[in-house]
Length: 196
Image (cartoon, rainbow, N blue to C red; front, side, top):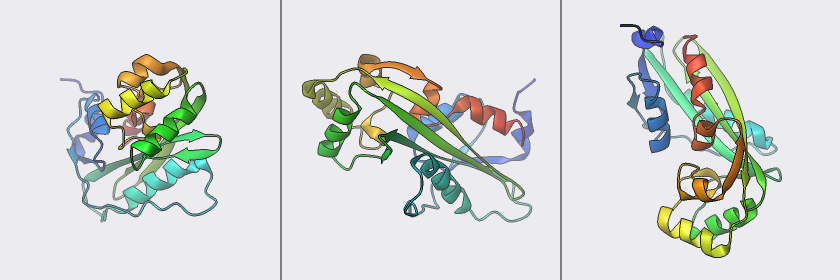
């Protein structure tokens, strides 16, 4: 039976991410893969790194942490997503107070979401990024508190998950990939995987 990513059958595909959303999104491509987060890295970004370059730098850093030697059949997929507003990188909030502050800043405004993705085998490495622009409607403090209390978005860049209540209630529009905002630009990844 035809499979559009039959070329991957020679690889042991590894998703090097603990994100349940990335696991779900990669699963949409109907490929066999395992999750391996056994090579954590220090995600400190060099001073002066441009905001748009942060997720690309981090995806490369995460991929390089996997020791691949000639003959290794693993294809490692790493990714990092950031939300950028006013030139600032909004990462994962440390607590409810920080999440509240981030969402107040995002309310009624457009922000940029960038995901860096790296594919790495013993013989080859490919890195790309995808950018989406997300426009939020206005949000009251009560609405923001409701979302934080109910959804606990502390593992999400910018303190929100577009696939959750806030995406339905507060996001007016997106220019770019919805899946990219969730954390993995699946179409771009699919096209890249076809080349391996």
